[in-house]
Length: 465
Ligand SMILES: C[S@@+](CC[C@H](N)C(=O)[O-])C[C@H]1O[C@@H](n2cnc3c(N)ncnc32)[C@H](O)[C@@H]1O
Image (tube, rainbow, N blue to C red; front, side, top):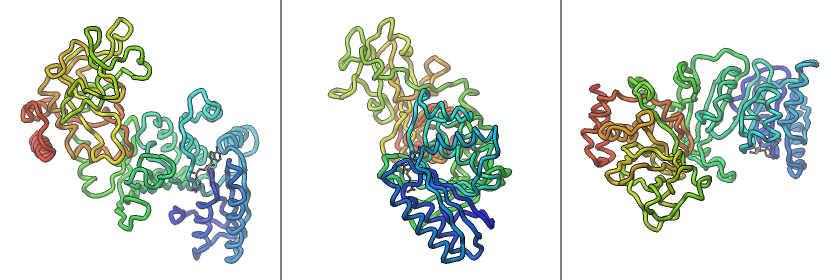
């Protein structure tokens, strides 16, 4: 991270927000001291909330001061034992009325990760600066950018969720409007870089420069873990990273030539889901909210309740005996709004297990196998439908083939680095024509073929369309 720092000035002001014991500051100081072009003066500002870390943090900063003195750099440092969010908002808010707040040339951060609610104090405080975000780490990034001088650089290691999460949309827009994105490095192994912090998603290091026009190429690299000696790196046109026509401003990480070619193919498919006349929604039954209607066994008053666990080789098999989740939901006037009319639908799991091979897993719900008049889809599944109505069976099989093919899964990972598959993600994809999907469905029959056969069939049909 420190080696990506490229700001050259006589005097450099560094911000480390959520400094811990000062590891990132120390790395940066060490890097700067080792360079042939060195600043005359550096100022280090470390924000940390945890008082217990203070002695070690001071020790690190004192060591930084000494290392600087040894190479003729005058180093001043300051620890702010306070909440970075509150403090930054105060500084920036006051700046609107008083003199310009002191700014930084470089911000290096490994911010804390935690969701906060919309009624929380943090959220209210952030709204003073029109920052709409619901996680500490994106709040830290947004504020760090605001505290940078024009041309100042942001270097951060964070979870990858902000690249596509629907809740991060306002953050992405704001962020991309204010910085020039120069470098992204992804760690493919979820849970490794932050294995102590319970963050089960891919992580990335980003480098961005404030207030500069977006350069045409972004450097994207990838390694399995932080210790992986093989790093794949390439320059990608910014328009491929953030597509100009994407209202969600997803950030795509296209690590190699194959990935690039694949993205070309997937993004030039002819239809959006909407243009196909189809839609995807998240299952309406949130089980812990509907607890009073849930039943382990079926009866004349219940209807099937479908969870991802009912997926079996591309089909929904129901009921499942001796299963900890309920198989059924009471169908009454109150619960009726949570149900959908029985018919054929394509279901996609919303969460995959930790290191699972596939991210996108689709299965067909067919009343021929699950006899019912209405059905409840639980919130852990997304379902494709014909704008509220069931799908044609052959089309559904084709759609399921397309969603289950390896190319789609690989492409999906370029913009989704966590275990969650959101309906927004599925809506952002492009799709083959109805005719191509129907042909895929016709060739599939009523059983999901082997992975090799799915891939060969989808490839063949997409080539000829
Ligand atoms: C993920 S750790 C990173 C520590 C250090 N930068 C490193 O890379 O080793 C995040 C740090 O932010 C601190 N922190 C959490 N919330 C904070 C807040 N609101 N203001 C300042 N620091 C905070 C935590 O105490 C923790 O030390």
